[in-house]
Length: 271
Picture 1 (cartoon, rainbow, N blue to C red):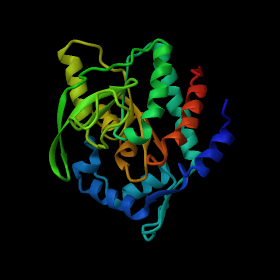
Picture 2 (picture 1 turned 60 degrees about the vertical axis):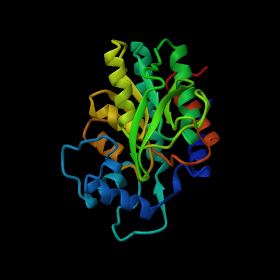
Picture 3 (picture 1 turned 180 degrees about the vertical axis):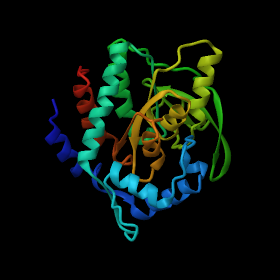
Picture 4 (picture 1 turned 90 degrees about the vertical axis):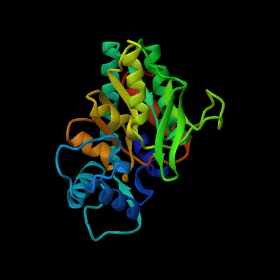
């Protein structure tokens, strides 16, 4: 059992919270692009209200603990570990609710190199507790616009977690994939589920476009987000994302294992 104090210490030591590796310049650039409604940072969200740069900075200061000073324009960004812990508790409550309802759940990540293990541990626990962990549209092609132009990716599932990979780059089922912010994969998965008359997820767990894309379509969604991912926090503020957990999403994969243990314990799903 991992205590709150022990996890707080781990968050700081692993730089999941506190001063993080995400540069302030990168976060501010994301806020500017979001204010301009650039689809690269909207992640599938269509905000109800107009969000200016100052609005986003205030929101991120409230949700993450970043500096709300617009004149602070360089150096590492900061995440308040207390906000991370509070959000992880809410995240665990949503998982516990899904188990209580035996709800079908979809897991998906745009950060397979870093976060696959975190989600896989949750997927395994929810499956053991009686939830259907959905895997529709495996192998389906998805065309995604990248900085190199439109590229075709294949949907795959590893340990119950959806990801995309470039065709031929890795064997199906290998524990890696492509980094993406796109909401198109989750849309493809949901479309396939509808067309095949299969189960639709009642909860989507993930990051980037998996969370915002599902939330925009009215499906309960929870996930992890860095200081340069304002879309998830805007989605939470507008009621489309149920929980956005602020943390650095690019540290070593093993640094997320204590978070898995903590969340499963808080959700009474420890194995």
